[in-house]
Image (cartoon, rainbow, N blue to C red):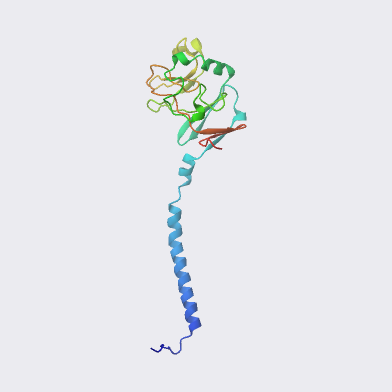
Length: 199
């Protein structure tokens, strides 16, 4: 079988046209694929919703609490005083789950102060009953007024009157079924990172 030879066809030009056509086709495919692939990437808002939050602990005075937002929820960071820590040890008789056996917290927070460092409480500020946000009521006894003479200081949920101590542990007989949730976090020097316990 003999090869067909086309007269007047330049093989170099044909090769050049073939390469040029393939390049234009590849560019067209890329121009369609790139926007499609970028549309699958999470938005900045979605990334921020789950991103870790940093706190400079050196700015937090003893007794002071700040609130940061992590995953759309308030997280409280409380610098506990020595008096607050001393009171925690006296609260067990008032509490439904003093050892936090049925509550949600990382392993490193399964202790009386529910934290890595006793001085700092890092807790999700959302009541475990119906999701209201309790308020800090650190006054003790009669100074707390409406909370009674035996109030040891802590958090009070105004929605359904659940009470928690300054470790976020729920008092007996409250509507809230469990202690406040401790989120994952890490402390390195004066830097606290909420949302990442390996930072």
